[in-house]
Image (cartoon, helix red, strand yellow):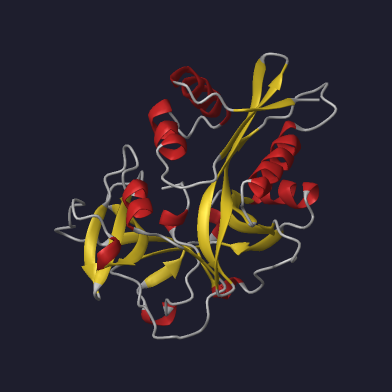
Length: 286
């Protein structure tokens, strides 16, 4: 059985985990010690549960549970976002490192005051999560669209069942991600945040925020980029009046799925994905 321990958060501990993550996810070259120090150690919120799995002295797994304040069904709440589940299958172990990391992470998160666990996973990971933990709710796949100009926000007053809460301190931290030159575009009394992609000429629509939340030192977009990638769930957008088209599944090798698990005894579920708001800025992928 794998041994689960708190992550060593020293410089060496960060380097060791970063190296392990890059071995498991070779495409994610941004996963270095600087990035982990920002995401794990500089985060201004709690709780944070950082776990490693070991077979004897060998690092064989890692997962982090990071603070995620949100409005859930009309009430302010605090949960955790599960990220960086890295636990390749290993013969000879009686228990899966991934299951052990999830189980211990949920236990410690609950004890630290978290009332829900959420995550954005690929289709393969969501199938594993549902098999291992049947109470996990697969809320729905994130929409992926590409288009021009800003999405058209409707004036709908429909209640949103789930929406991450940002404040000045947490948004300033999020926009200070290493290696990500975010830019702002003024839009309807607020700002849209643009992020980079790995394709020239295409930027990510990270989210819309009121003026009083955006850090004053973030540069404006002088020439808004014509092509924009939009990824997430957004009840306010009127897509029929926006110049965006869905990206076909054949061009999306790993569609992303939003998952939710209530950690209280209330058995809450989010239900209709059309009432859930997830912006690209709400998780760590961009």
